[in-house]
Image 1 (cartoon, rainbow, N blue to C red):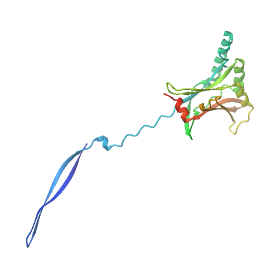
Image 2 (tube, rainbow, N blue to C red; image 1 turned 90 degrees about the vertical axis):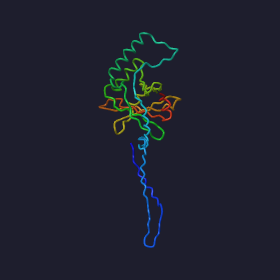
Image 3 (cartoon, one colour; image 1 turned 180 degrees about the vertical axis):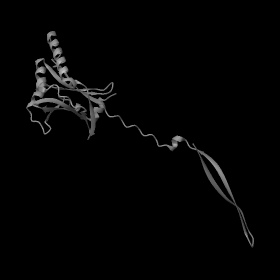
Image 4 (cartoon, rainbow, N blue to C red; image 1 turned 135 degrees about the horizontal axis):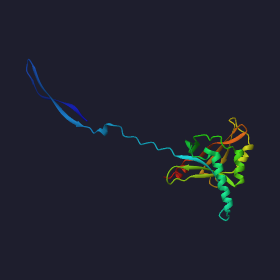
Length: 221
């Protein structure tokens, strides 16, 4: 874009004084100059894009109880567990599906909350005997996005679920329990909420709280 700037140069050449008149000759010289502005100089500097919020989803899974490296399991037992796992996952439906989260930051901590409530397909009253009969347990996974990111896994034992059944519900008919890793408190805390409906209890939602600094470290891309 080209803008024209007009500069006025006023010069007094000479002055002659006579008895009856004063002659003042003034020359006005009008100069035209061309000033070229670069387009980007006239525009605001582009703002840096806001960082994308950390991505994480919650996935609950059923798995065999770890026996340790020194113990072995028979092929018959392994087959029985495989069949039990298939049955539990089929009955639980979306309970064992990925659940995206809503993230918020407060006072140096990051809180992830499952976006969708789990449906009421498999009650805890039905789930516990299925787990104990085949030596199974539940794992609650906080799965971070990114090729090199690290996930966090915590165990939700059938005994913890059984304890929840005997607790008193709050005003929303909900109960919750806290999960954390022994000697690894920096990995955060998970809160599993259970809702009572018509005398049965169902896993309702999961919250995951962790230090923002530690979470960023685990979100390595």
